[in-house]
Image 1: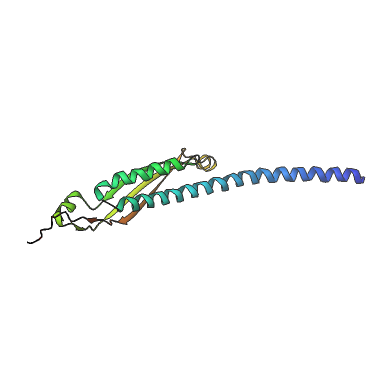
Image 2 (image 1 turned 45 degrees about the vertical axis):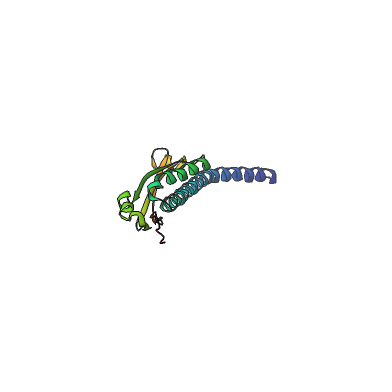
Length: 161
């Protein structure tokens, strides 16, 4: 066998090795990319849920729902592509209107906690196909924060003569 024939044989085996390696490497790279996007989506949902609970727990408890929906709208405007469609599933507040009414006109510190639960859709292609699931995948997060609100004193002060 001449040197020229050996060189062609070596090149051919290099191409076969490269093709075999790519058959394994490409799916592995796609799965790693897909899993990293899922992890980022879950972290983003946790962060959004924490912000929803924190913002809703600070301020008048009767307005907590509107503050929570504002954060959800903000999160939905900032995301696109892989992570989308944040939803507020549940907002549970242990402080009620009756609790506030019991403080009367003198006001005071409220004690209680607020729990927020959010859901996010993550669009994956390789992992969903591999596990035979549906697209998109949904992940739920739940966070609890203490209510920090002081009911204002609304009594009229009486001054003497």
